[in-house]
Amino acid sequence: MTWVIKIGGSVRDPEPVLRDIAATVAASHEQIVVVHGASRALNDLSERLGYPPRIVESGRGDVSRYTDSTTMDHFLMAYAGVTNKRIVERLRQLGVDAFGLCGLDGGLATGRRRADIRIVANGRTRILHDNHAGSIERVQAPVLQTLLDRGCTPVVTPPIAAEDGTAINVDGDRLAAEVAIALHADRLFFFADTPGVLHDAGDQASSIREMTADNCDASSFSGRVRPKLQAAARAVMRGVDSVVIASGVTGAPLQQALRGEATHIVAASAANSSS
Image (tube, rainbow, N blue to C red; front, side, top):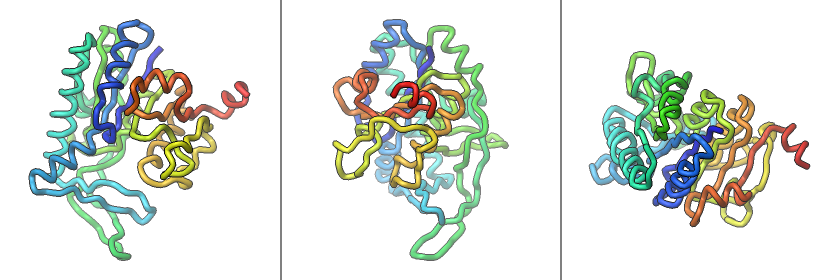
């Protein structure tokens, strides 16, 4: 079986997740691809370098990071540099043959750049130029499968490559979903700082236990869970058996998620057959 595990940038200390990954790999139960973000690390780095992050909102209410060329330099440092290599370092210390790479490497992931973006600020619409962000169009599964077949655990992060090879920032949850789809993965896990999808964003005890892909109405939710639900629904509709959104800050995140302490998103037919 193949699992894709996304460690969100909101998880300040990935140690519990990494320990669970190492234990699973050692037991030879699954082939695992790790995808990670580094949003907190990038924010912290940008502040220290005197170039604070600029978060913008589209007319549809979607929130994203404006990634100009300077921000992309910082992005590469935080994502493909420090965070990726620290995760690789720790996994190797735990006995995992981890192999770190970003979407640029070997053309692993390619997409389309949105150099000009329309935003809403103070009730007015503006267009920002020189944006190094975009969307994912293709993931090269053979690159990852070759590593998996050699017993390696790929550790993948944005950025990816635009049509002309330019590095672009893409949503990490969507990247994880596209990796899972390309590999025909059995499961996709999203680990963040909440115990799943919450009925009430202010109540950690309001986690939803099960959802189906066709009722993942992201418009009913706000914040970072929206792109997660969109990515989860796409993954399930494209053949991934189930998607799990769980806490990455507990003592044994993967084990607790497998025990049901998370939000599980499945196809409608799978939910009906289990009820």
